[in-house]
Length: 311
Image (cartoon, rainbow, N blue to C red; front, side, top):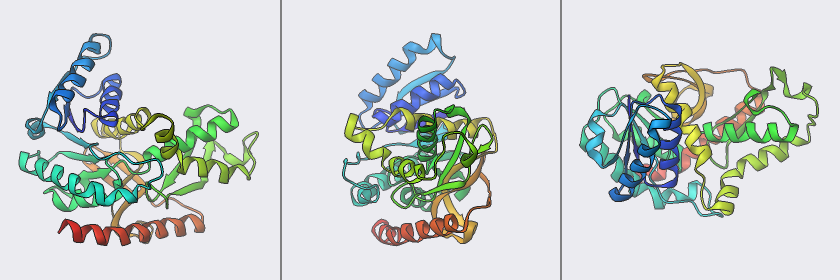
């Protein structure tokens, strides 16, 4: 399957391309960027490593790659400042994103193409893309809280000296300030978190606060996140390529899950070749459900302003 990454010349796009190359599942990776020379350079650098990794075609260029792409990943956008929330990006990023989506639409994507939105604020822009593209809503998804979830798990594992690959915990809702930690189902090696050696309930606020601020922390320390975002993107794309029907916290337009409608945010989502296959309303603590609904309400207020701007 062919994956095209719009914004492939930038940090996030190039890290995603590298993660996909190392994964070896995509048969072709195309890096698209307004700076085509940079995109071609990134593609060439990746291509040089191919003989030691996977048999793939890797190219750089522009929207000529869209018509035969199976997955279109949009990472382009203006970078968030250290003291800026994701929602503060909205006025700076909406116009740019809308033009990208128009260009994708004009290029003529396949009717079966899956569009993965990574640009921030991702939940708002996922909704915008789903409204603008002539594709079923189920084929337009956002990276959502998949990145927050793996950050959350990594920090829990670090704190408890536990194996990261056996640490399971979810972040749901908005990829931003109103995200919701799901402690009710958190486990390590199958053990409920409160049964794992070293766990102390007082750690909960500390770990969640650091998770919520992880993006800003990385930006402050190194200028921008790349590696973990690339892995999170690969998680989603692999689920589509392999038709895994994997349950993941990705963003899509909600139509009643947990009583939330007409806004894009992350709930446990079954992801496969057709995009969103289903949503799973897993049992949550009442305060977690309340947090999810509050997250939806917060996003809805911003979305109403954005849709007026888009119109």
